Amino acid sequence: MKWRLGLAGAVALALGCTESLPVEPAADLAAARGGMTAAGAQTVVTMQQNLFVGFDIDAFIGGLLGGDPGTALMTAYGELLRTDFPARASRIADEIARTRPQVVAVQELSEITLTVPGTPISYYMDFADVLLDELAARGLDYDLYVVENMNLPDVVPGPVVAGLVDRDGLLVRGDLVVSDDGADIYTLCLGTGATCIGGGLPFAILRGYVWVDVEVAGMPVRVVSTHLESGTSAPVRYVRASQAAELMVALAEVETPVIVMGDMNEEQGGAPNPSIGGPLPDLPSTHDIFMLGGFTDLWAAMRPGAAGLTCCNAPDLSNGLPGYYERIDYVLLRGFTWPSGTPQGKIAVMASTPAGNFPNTAGLPIWPSDHAGLAASLLFPPAWGTK
Image (cartoon, rainbow, N blue to C red):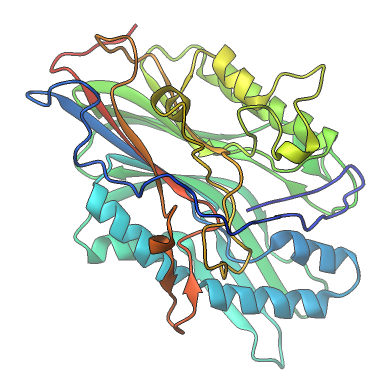
C-alpha cells in the first residue's frame, strides 16, 4: 500500500505500475541447498508478505480532503469487492501450506468498516480472522502476534461509517516455543499529533513493529515485522529514516540472532522510486541504516544479479502482468554464521510471474496483493551458533 503524503498533506496518486514481465522464478524452496549438504542440516523458513488493504487509500483520502467523499466511498467500495480479500487470503494460505514457514511477517493486516446508510454500501472485513480461518481450514496451526499501528474509527463526517485499523503481524507456527514477544509504535509520524510532521490530515498515520523471541532450529531468534512510512517527499523520507533508526536502536542490545522482515518502502539505492533520484544528501538511506545496524540484506547477498522487484500491482489488482517496478520488501539478518561466511539457502519472489494471477470469486483476474511476497529458506549445519 502506498501512503503518499506531502508536507501540506496533499495526496498524490502515483503508483506508476508497468506490466513488464519479471525474470525471477516462482518460489520453490524444496531444493534449497546453497552449496551445503542437506544431510543433518537444519532449515529456517520465513515468509514476508504485505497483504494490501484492498483499495487505493491515497485516492480515498484525496477524495475526502478534496470535498468529494461520495465518489471516494463508491470507488473504495468497488475496489474492495474486486480485490476480494477472502480469495486473496486463500491463495496466500495455499502458499503458506506449501512452504510451511516457521514464521510469516505480514503488513496491512487490516480491519475495515464501510457503511453508507440508504445505499448498498455495507462492508466489514477483519483480515486477521479471514487469514487464520484459511490456515485452519488447511490444518495449519499458527499463532498471531500483532502491533496495532492506528485505529481510525470514523474518518468521514455524518452518518457514513468508514473505519480502518492498520496492523502488522507475525504468524508463528504452533509447534514453536515463543519465550517473549512485544510491540511498539515509532515516535515520528505523519499527520496531526505531538510527534507528527505534515499538516492537512485530522489524524496521525502511525507505524510500528511487532517481535517475538522464538526457538528455531534449536536456537533462540528474534523475529520482527514492520512497515515503514511511504512516500517520496523530503519530510516523508526523514520520517522513514527516523523509524528505521529507531528500530535499529531497539534491536542493538539483542544478543540472539535477529530476522527483520517488512515493507520498508525504500530501495537499496535510497529512493522509493528511481525517478526521484538518490537519498537526501544529509540523510543516510533506510537501507544504509539497516546495514549500519549490522544487518545483511538476504536478497542482495544471495541473488546480487537479480532485480527482486516486489512493488506494485495496480490498486484494483487488475493488471494482467506483474506490475512490480521497485524492490522495497526485505528479509534482513543479523547474528547468523555459516562455515562459508555467507548466507546459505535460497530466497525467492512469490507471485512474480503471470501464473500468480488468478480469478476472484466473480471470475475477475487479481493478484494475491499489490506487493509480491518473499520466501526464504536458510540452511544451517547441524550445530550452529551466533557471533
